[in-house]
Image (tube, rainbow, N blue to C red; front, side, top):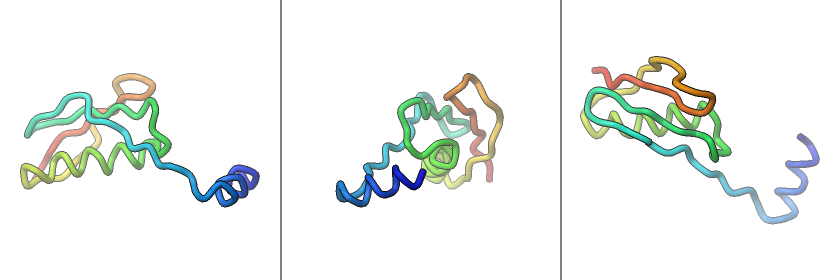
Length: 75
């Protein structure tokens, strides 16, 4: 891990790749983090941003596959 941090510092920083919404509506959202460098924390942030469009916040609902997480949009 220290080597990775040093390499990023030397190269001018690492690029963060956010997760993507695969499906979503006002009631729920599925986030795919297959190619994301932000992991499950990034998935929650993306889900929360999606739910905020409807005046709600994301609540974890389960793991659909290795890199897909489901969230409910709740008040």
